[in-house]
Length: 143
Image (cartoon, rainbow, N blue to C red; front, side, top):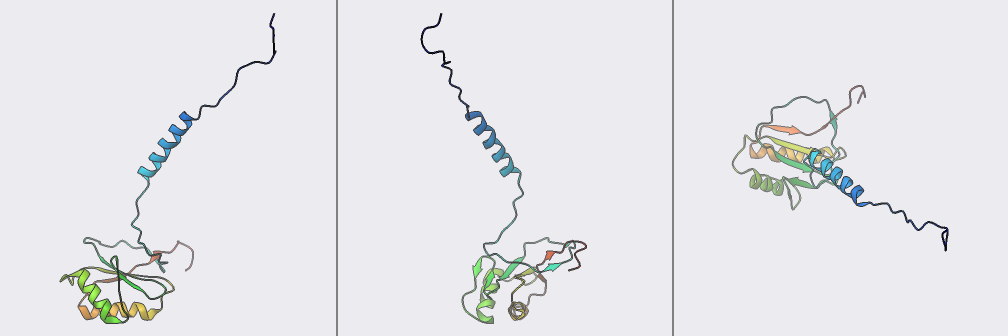
């Protein structure tokens, strides 16, 4: 015969430590297997174009133009207005290599004058291998 309370004294607990171990393992798996894409610190919405394979053997010099007309050469922001400060920054980053590939990454809302200013500065410095970065359009979208 049992004296006292008829209620069972067993307390059920859920052990969450193995669950945390599994979640951390999954997190590490996804972090280590994800693709690492080169992101710039400046958000630029690129215009669209058809995708085509290109020969990219040497690292290209990148000129970025945001929608407000600010220029960035590599990771350096161009200080000042007009072509001359842009030419000085390009020359400082490119050195004497004028056969280097140059990529202009302009926001889709950037005025054409800013892109032409960058192209003019590159032409005055003697660069001949120039590309304008775009994002590929989706097949069948008609844009």
